[in-house]
Image (tube, rainbow, N blue to C red):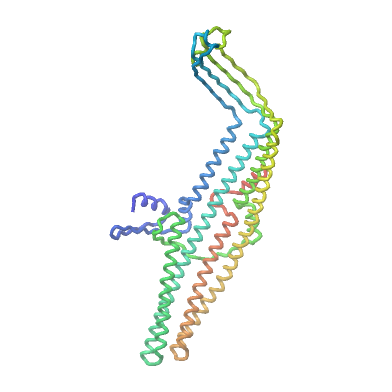
Length: 451
């Protein structure tokens, strides 16, 4: 393993424990983590989030560009030329230098600069909200992968318990067979059931390994890193009503607020497009020097063509009175873009409401399943004990015992699946509602009302 990789793992392990073992030339990494640490690692390493942050940086500079366009600009132009011809034949020079320095500043642009600045400000806010939305998505995705790994680990336990139960039953069957109280078919059937359970352990272990590799990929660790998950799947009642969740999402989901900001930005661009029909006023100051020497007057008499030392200060006004309806076409395009942004904003609201409702219904369904499957596990345990006793007493069949054991395994698996679905739905509901990760988005709604 390279030193950089070791440093990376050390930095990412926040409060986890890293252990390493060397076998030949290979080095196996082992990392103990909880769900919060996995989320932090994903935030540090996710490429999609880095790309969103790059978009935000670009938006910051776009706003900077728009605001700076409203201030003064300083321009210097210079030229150096060899000259000749009849006009210069009497002059004692064959060179001509010219320097011009000018300062200009827009005074009135018909709303062009104001609209551009407003659009850039709004776009920056929308991009910042997009970054927060990306973080929320990454968090939910990491939590889902973590919960899936926990569920797979629990399913290994269920499979291993099934193997131990069937091994114990097989010993009982062999003892009774040796005593001549049961047929050889009971032994064979029990052996087949045990072999199937052992295959179940192999399958469960493989699913867990895949789940860990997937989690490693999401959080940015090498796929072969051996993760030891500190948490267990649990259950805490969710007491917020569906209508409250939906209302919260409408006011706090980053994508909904970002869509509203894009509508305002599109309206500001309408102002920019409409400015083409209005006059433009600039204040300007200029100083020009031309002659046969760079940066100063030439040696020719003052009344000659070569002696040019001029300046001016004043106001420039331009008005594009008729442009063959080009501005009108730009305004129509801007209005269409605004309508498109409004449709996108409404679609974001509809999607948000649907996602909240779906996650909430999945949550409540899983919540009901938890209690149901928990009771089913207790009943299945009792049924299995009864089947064992009846079989040992010679009044029950081997098929009854194996059927009871299979139902017990199924009930235990269903219980852990219900816990997984509940926790996963809770994480998905948090994302659908727009539960904050880093950015307090509530301030953006009040800010938007002022725009």
